[in-house]
Length: 121
Image 1 (cartoon, rainbow, N blue to C red):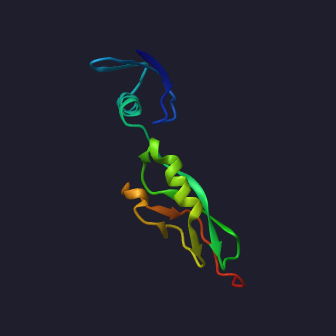
Image 2: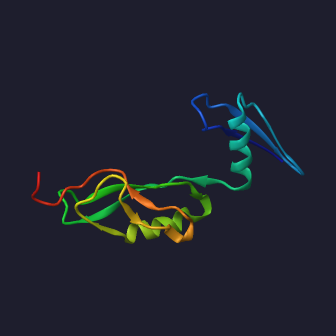
Image 3: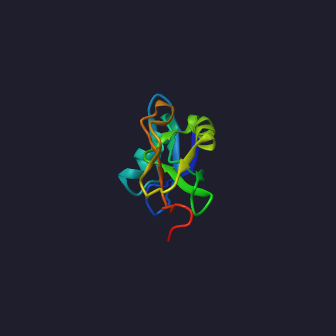
């Protein structure tokens, strides 16, 4: 079976062709990262998730968040359910952990922006 994909490991955006059989063969990559990306995408795809979480007592109602490491692509919808249930209390600093070890993935959901307490400058 052959698959075509665009590498996202660097700005080159190489057009990869991946042949899946007993071994995975990658062509079209201009660097080693492209081969690694394609093999991982075929065998165990992972993603960083970005979203927002409701803030209580803040100068704004939401804080932007992301996972601090890649998580299995197959868990994205379940992780989003956890993120959508979460609430954070102001003040919030960049890097604050909002959800620790989300769904036992080893990834934390962390704040990517600062939120002040309501009424403060």
